[in-house]
Every structure is written in C-alpha cells, then in structure tokens.
Amino acid sequence: MEWPRPAAPGWSVGLASALILGSCGGEPDGGAPSADRAPPPGVPGEEAVAVAPSARASRFLGVLTLEGGAEFILCEGTPLPLDGPAFLDMVGLHSELAPGLEPMEGIFADVLGEVRESQEGPWLRALELRRAALEGWGCGRDEVDILLEASGTEPFWTLTVQDSLAIWRMPEGSKQFVHGGPALMPRGGWEVVVDAVDARVELRAEFYQEPCRDSMSGAWSHLSAEVVLEGREYRGCAFIGPGWEGRI
Image 1 (spheres, rainbow, N blue to C red):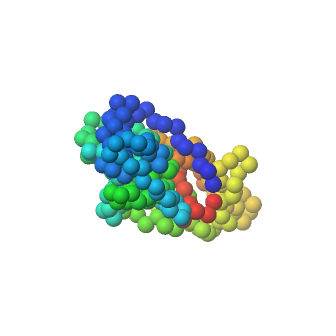
Image 2 (tube, rainbow, N blue to C red; image 1 turned 135 degrees about the vertical axis):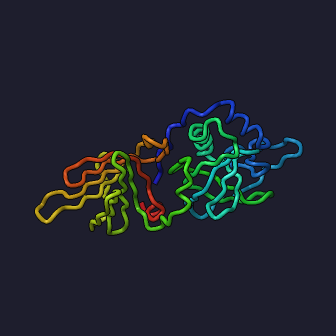
C-alpha cells in the first residue's frame, strides 16, 4: 500500500545542503551511493554502483545523528549510512527536535526502509518515516505485536491495538477490549470498534493518515487518532506498528 509522505518540515536549507554536499556527491556518510542521487556517469573517480532493492521493506528503529554526515544507529547498535526519499524529512525533524544541540545529538526515529549494499558496505534507504522524537524510549520496547498505537496527553493515555485485543492505559490503570480487527473507513484511515453487550459503543478508535505532533514533547507521528471511550473523547498521535506493516 502506498502511503502519502508527510509534508516536509521546516528544515534549514543550509543544513540540508551542507549534509548533501558533505556526503561525497550524494553518497551518504562517505560513500554509499543512492538510487535517488547516483553519481552522474563519466565523472572521473566515480562509478555508479548497481544496487538491488531488498525483497521487501522492513521497519528500522534507531537513532539519527548528523555528525560528519547522516548516520542511523540501529537500536541494537549497528550504524548505517542513510539516504532515500525520507532523508530530508528526518534531517528537518532533527533540526526541530534538537535545536542548538551538537549535530551528534541523536533523535529516535522509526523508519520504513531497505538495507542496500554498495562497494563501501551496507546503507539504509529510508522510504517513509513513521515516528521521530528527541527521547529514545522507542528502543526499549518490544513492538512486534502492535498493529496500531495511539497516545495523548492531558490526561496521559495510550491505546495499543493487537490482533484481537485493544489495551487502554492511563496512570490509574488499564482496560482490555476484545475486537474484530481494524476496518477501513469510507473516508480513509482505519477504525477499531468494540460494542458493549447493551448495543452501546464502548470503545471507538479512528486512525487518520494525517501527521501529528505531540503537544508537550514535539514528537512527530505519521498518523492522528481520535478515541471515544465510554462516551469521553480523546485526541492524540498514532502510528502503524510493525505487526501490521506488511499486512495492510
């Protein structure tokens, strides 16, 4: 399924240009040539390297740093040079989430991408950004079973949608609801509905393909969400989880 790319954030043209020029004619972090910015043929000392996409895109979680060129350090510690369609969005969010900090200051990012090979080694082609935040909390979670997740503030809440369960969490406790799976809404996006035994709607969660910023931390997500729980409405940010990425 083709996802709309988020609108490019207010990134600095100077910063992005410097990173692009500093990556050796379009090769991220010292040499991984990009299919998007391959060196032109015939340039002395440069040779385009044919790279084949992986069998399917995967989710990659890690930390983006810009010291000496864009580098994505996977949560398990492996560093990969970075390029691709989502590259400038990620650079822009880095400049917004870590203003005035050293370029090596990292932000957490959740990316749909492909690992490709070049003469210099593997690099990550970032296709679409799912989340970005200054905090690194994303590396400490097991998210493999998550289909969709939404969260918000005032009060703090989280709704985690798994295959048959929707788990609602707040500081004072949690509730679980059995559901029949996310359904495509006529106007786009998805909904999860749980009906009570007396025909009332006990839980309804709607997920929209609209980028969202957390009102407190500034964290960015590629989806927005509205949740109605027992008659009360909550609004927040959301993302597609790894457990549903390839099943839509």
